[in-house]
Length: 308
Image (tube, rainbow, N blue to C red; front, top):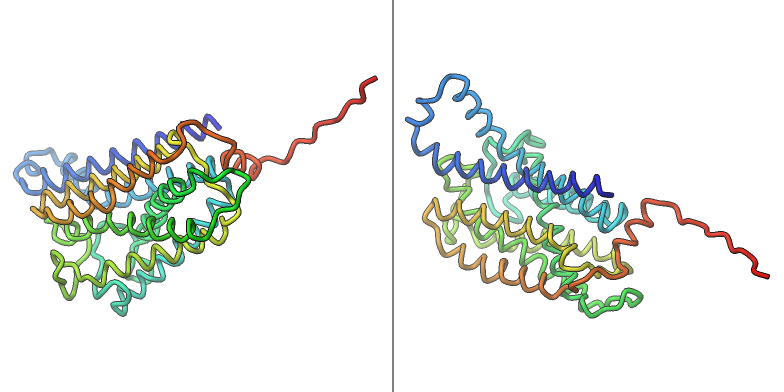
């Protein structure tokens, strides 16, 4: 278990570091090509490699960190029953969106995010849906379940509330990221029909809310008998992942001189995420951490000794 924690933290540090490196390259180096030309040939080659693969690296590191966290904290069953539906459903939505315009609008991915599935959607995109969707859902569900005992079933209104809030947290991150990434000096995707919200169609918000809500609802069905009584310390990684990705998107928006989405993201995403984290219990309880341990290890059988 300690080894998994070390790996998880290393992946999280690498994830945040890769985002910081990417921001420096996109906002500081690319606008000044003379800096790149002043580098030796090896340095120029390294910079080209980093710009071509930086987006792939930070998404893979983030997905790996969250996957290990889910396995370690929730257990194998809970991890897989969230990750598989999230990847399958989000990939389906993205393939539909890039080929038909439903449910997000008409857009297309450019290079920089890895191999494209069916020539349309980079393989890293469903991974980003998974890891940001899971941290958003966990923050919402744990916050709403803070008063539920570990042996008590969760009411459906709490399930529905967690799905709705989790989908809003996920979409709030996209408020900030999408306009900046599609209008950066090196864009990663383009809208064929730019919309009224800083080049992004309002339909995109409905697509994000709907896609996130669907795979979170699937997880809620699988997890309906599993209380999520995680403590604040156990929610540290989900909060760190959410906030660091929001900062990445916000800095990109600042570089593009786009301000309104940042305010919306703070009001609808950052503040609720921190409040939900604060609503969690301070100390760990008998919760899904023990459930996760049972998922990985056979139940120990303790012999009963007779006493004279």
